[in-house]
Length: 184
Image (cartoon, rainbow, N blue to C red):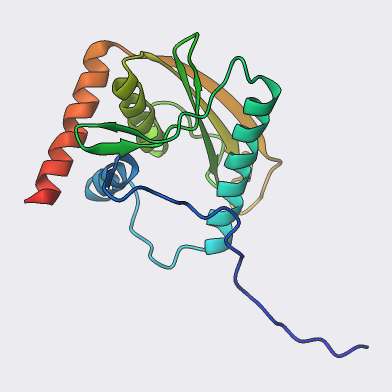
């Protein structure tokens, strides 16, 4: 048998996030979810999981944008009320925001669940920022319908939401209240 030694046990940074300094919508949503107890802050979260999910999301966004350049656009960063949002994809002619998520959670979770709360807050925020009402949430469940440590095949689902102006305004108000609390 050849001599073998481990030379790395950390995932490479596949797609480093470059962000404009300031208050980001995703940070506000993370803080709200922590306060509500939807999940716990885990500073030692597995970097390989994060990088894999981020790379998969990026690949899906790129595929849509490349396949249909007249339909989809990558909007980059948006700013409203000194808050920054970074939507994944827009369909400007249809006024639709497409958000892509990769998750290790079971595919039994869906719209309206505690697990989707942050996704739905995010999509509502971006829609409010551009004055639209329709969004699509693409979710890749990496472990499928796993239960009791039995991992299933990946599942890909897309949901379309149509929000009222009231829902979008209420969501934005919640985010701005969170921002104001943190800036005190």
